[in-house]
Image (cartoon, rainbow, N blue to C red; front, side, top):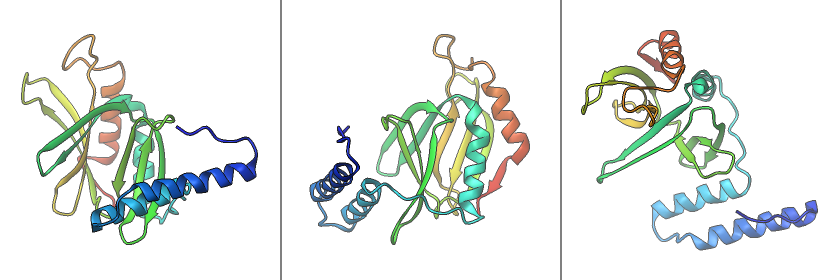
Length: 193
């Protein structure tokens, strides 16, 4: 993190310097990196929240609010080139929205210390599904919310985390009930658009 000066003039100057430094440090020779550069500049500039449009932002915000009582979940994303990222964090983290020109509206779910951040392109997110299914190994029940695109591709899975002291299938108190409350409210699938 950065140490910020105490005066507001110095603070703004410092933020602009950090933004300029961040933009200069990201190569911008490919279209992919230009997108990262744009995202970085928006985020460093304070990342203004995209206004709720009465559609996906408001629905997504409402849904995430409903899920905050799930407690600890595994956040899982799979890259088609062969990587899988899994991490554990609470569902009750801060939610904000920002726009990347030419890329769309993103939701950011982040811990207060920014050690956990998840960015979801809401222009690609079309629906959310809820399922209770057996684990591929062990057969214990899994409780999973999946954010999907128009082709039913999975953008992100959020799966209740079992209590590591008790083992797979043994969930933290109240988390399964909280998941089932949300599932019963929305059904097996909710359209975001």
